[in-house]
Length: 224
Length: 192
Image (cartoon, rainbow over all chains, first blue to last red; front, top):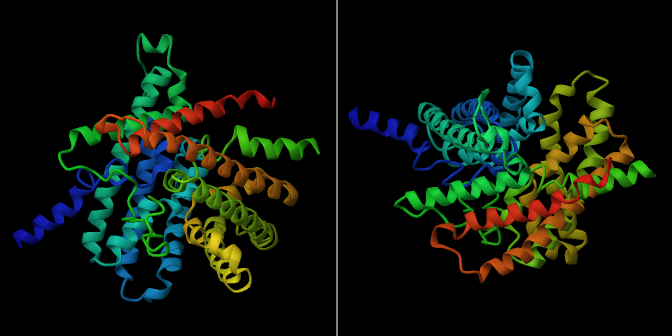
């Protein structure tokens, strides 16, 4: 029992640091770059993705023996898209300001490779509890990465942070950081820092691991 | 005529899908290592974007809106795109094998490309007419190809550069992408 509990804790914590989806596994780059002009948006996007990930992981792992292997990809897509529609309604109703600032990227959670990757790699092979913990861990890891990106960009690029005004920088902020170019730059710097700090070398390129299309492209490495 | 040119050029340059809307980052970073694969991916994405627009626009305005089912957009669009990509792949394989051999490998990669879903949703959100949607899809696809082709040239130089150990691989690529993105900011004042 103790060992079982340990492995469940591991499912939860691995997504936060060791297999952080954005910074280590380099998945889900589009929302990471697009919505992180403010720390608050980063948290909102992170939590919305966590919700979808949790819902889809639970449903997919519960149905994993019912869904035929051949049609699993369309089945997964429908489940994920349904949860995305649901969170869209919830945000529109309760947090309309966040709904407006996330805009089209909320819809695009459907094609976020983190969610599809977890469904394919984890939820379709494991039980409901393990899949739920995996989703929460990955979701928290993603939220932390987005919050970090958003904080750096908002502080340097706008001289503000979560509604606070940062002295000195606010008088003359580096606007570039909240522009698209700053997104690429900040993410590059953060990944370089992670490379420096981590003992085990993370993959140098975007890996085929977790890519829903790895099977289709025959892991040809053309995408490397 | 003027609106058509404005939609085309703004989808291509000022609101470039990759460099200012951050859609399709995975193929942008993944398939941009060689010039010919970058161009191949670009053509395939442009093709699928236009086809996806042709299919999803009538579905939205002909079936979903009259029945008050607009909220099903996401579910229906992604399924239609996935089915359609598969269909195109099979069609090319049977009927145009020469085109299949050059584009075929990229087609499965496109299903989960957010730029394709993005362009169909944007067409609806912006309230474009059918013709304007097609132009927007064409511009978006061409802009995607332009970004990929330019970036493949940058990456070729990057291969031979002497980069500090920590920055090798993805960090250096992202910082190079940031500089390319700055160059696209130059188009920002093109339309007012």
